[in-house]
Image 1 (tube, rainbow, N blue to C red):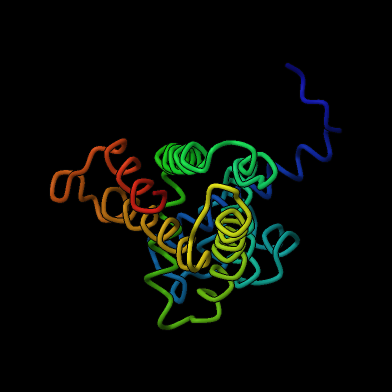
Image 2: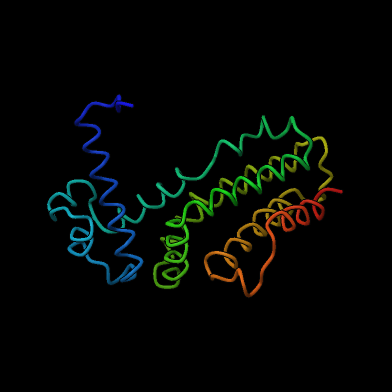
Length: 201
């Protein structure tokens, strides 16, 4: 299928994507502090002036990676209007399955999460930006679901949202980020069914 975008737009988008890929690779290898714009330009296969024409500085690059991380998330599955129509048990199983399926197919996301966690002590503002833009909106939508769904009887919807979201993140970290599938194994469907049973009586 022919790309309907104008050629100039395609070239700009493709160049920015190359730079972001080079930045992620450089950050993952060198860490944020040691990753220079020279190294990022080399990893992306672009000149340094080209790099600066797209991104003003290293912090801007990192924030662009956060935006890309958010865009790669399946936010359509967090449409409250659709999730409120189905039984809560079905909505939560659908959410958990979709989020875990998406995560397993997006290995670069795990590289980025490792990077954010690893650099959070030295660069707390970057970690806070990640939480504010990537994690907080998901928690807010889950809280809305536990607050307004007719099947929900949560005493504290925000706590329920954090239990649900935090459990999924913990599963991803232990199974994928920390490579623990053979150390603390748990079959995915068993995990999802058990999590939903805890939250929906």
